[in-house]
Image (cartoon, rainbow, N blue to C red; front, side):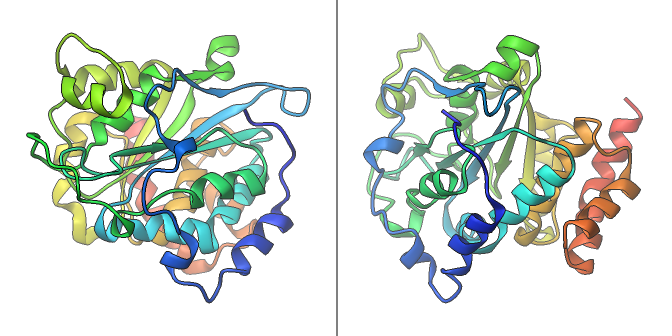
Length: 305
């Protein structure tokens, strides 16, 4: 997937048309859309094309439980065009974006949803808004598992069920952004792999092993939406290491993600360059300041590696 050109103007028109809508008016699904059901899916593909000869895979794996639904809502009604503009203004010419959504596989009808890698505004928006938010029809499945949310299933899918030309042709890793405010299950349960993905595994797979697989082909980041939810920070640092970013507001998701990609790709040299890029892209001064504060600890730790 990933064919077609991106238009920032077309994307802005889509989001601006929703200015007065509620989240339930934008996200109308009440169950997993058949095209987003991961069961039986072998891979989601991010491919090069004549239009996009050096595609860069970007995955947003979104916790959509409870208040975490604010992030997909912000993306769909305001922020996703800003992400694309900031990213492309910094020099990323051929991004392809995939959306996943996940909740708790032990008690929800929609434990994992997976779109396609896309390059156009219309198709990115299509997959994002086909997502079911947890408040729109979850919590009906009853099973033996108990814990936080099923982050490990989304990680497992990214590790085992994506095929990316950037890595396979150029050894260029993609970027994986996971949002959340709870803990994961300690392992991918054999039962959940079968029930959700239709995938037989011999035994539960510890999340640390899944994370090792993710890092082979992805640059993974965990985004905590605000400081009030920093209680999970230590837990996630035990899994993602320094690549845990504690934002000040969910509204910074796009500027933080785009800046992390630009810095990691070497397109922006330092935080000063990030500030200049965000200003040139039209970000508000308060957004620039909070974005820089969020990524500064990661930038400092990266410089010491």
